[in-house]
Length: 336
Ligand SMILES: Nc1ncnc2c1ncn2[C@@H]1O[C@H](COP(=O)(O)OP(=O)(O)OP(=O)(O)O)[C@@H](O)[C@H]1O
Ligand SMILES: [Mg+2]
Image 1 (cartoon, helix red, strand yellow):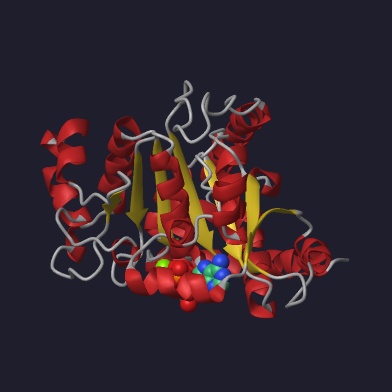
Image 2: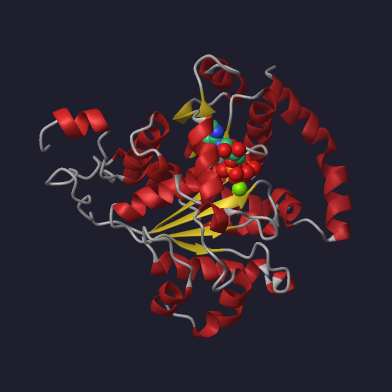
């Protein structure tokens, strides 16, 4: 019996006792989702349908790419996509990653909004050097009369075009954020943007479950540290209990270095899932990027980490972000 099978079996034994306890306290939507057979069945069939849609999408050949080198990618026909970046351990670099991926998409002429689900301490705004203009709580309050144009106009916007919806740093409105209205807001965001990228999710809170219900992609972000790998294994277990086929989830190993930490082979063995994307470790650039509020891909456009992020965007969203050349390429590479 593998460690994951064993933990699953142990959990099964405790399930009914826990279920009654949690239900009577009325605290956990997660456990309601887990133990209500109808809910589980609904989640399973939705997850299966999503998996099919996603398989069809990512199997499509990506855009042919820019006609002329250096021009933005051709805007292909695209359905709006909502991607949840699920951090499996503290300090995986999730915010750095999301801010950069959003910037790459925006520079490829996709409209993008990043939603920061870390309602108290999220730092997406800081990562893009933006200030609060229109908070999550304000957006929810205005929801009945909010339309896509107004939303675009009111949200703080990075010079790349990336908009950010966050509540962090403003505790006043926290109490007004209800998961049920949050779902409605997510629906409006999908209508308003080509891409919605969700950062700041680390657990299966009500807000996280609201996002999961509507997400098209779920990326589990971890690192090669042992606690992070354990964190990914635990979360994969919970995803399975919720009815998600783990093959539907993408594992991203951020801050990846061949010589450090747990190898990709060992990670695959322990998760029973292959890593889909790796983003190279580049601590000095990542630190400067966060300190200056500049996306890593702008701070170091030709770095290995940036190229890895460009690859992710190409595979997942079918866009070719315009690649900038290094000094050598600019001097010796001709006009292409
Ligand atoms: N590709 C990278 N290589 C090296 N260090 C990185 C990379 N990306 C981010 N970091 C570093 O990781 C640390 C955490 O970054 P960040 O704030 O983006 O993550 P986070 O959002 O807190 O992650 P989590 O949500 O998992 O807690 C920072 O010190 C940052 O400089
Ligand atoms: Mg963060």
